[in-house]
Image 1 (cartoon, helix red, strand yellow):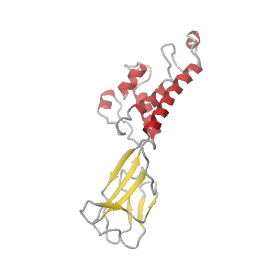
Image 2 (spheres, rainbow, N blue to C red):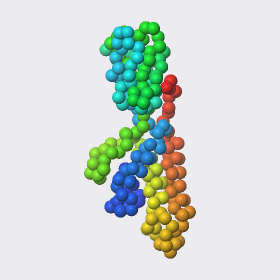
Image 3 (cartoon, rainbow, N blue to C red):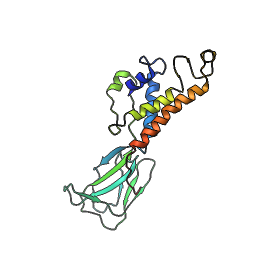
Image 4 (cartoon, one colour):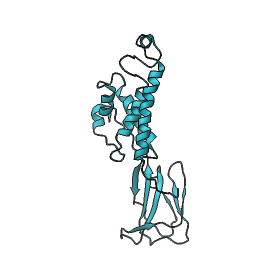
Length: 209
């Protein structure tokens, strides 16, 4: 993605927009995609225990929107059915799953499966070589979306070679660049982002959370 952004900006050396700023813009693009584009997270670590009706959400699934809650029909069967009556209590740390029936929905030792729709994982690398090893966590085919959003942010900084920076300067006046030029180019990229995002929007199942 950084290579794509560099190419579109004609900024292979990161002189117009520093590398860390490019990464920040890409992460903002990933954040803007949620919840229309999301990362599916599934956890099967919870196990029903005798007499226990409250369970803390496992680490990693507590930050997304719950899509399905399922319970294993019998221990080690690997056959899951929809969990009946339950509630989810929000928390600043980890939500709590509360089973509302007076009996467990399956035998003790049966597993529970939680599926959530979560945000994409931000890029954390601070150098170009390290970025090459980071993986995009969104669905295949949506890789261009963060780049389009980043272009909208980046072109608000520098329109083309006629400009030195976004503030209205003598250089811009001499080269006939005005704020409307900056705004129009930036809005073009944001419009492309929204258009493609609408086309690629993922189906969002009805959730009880």
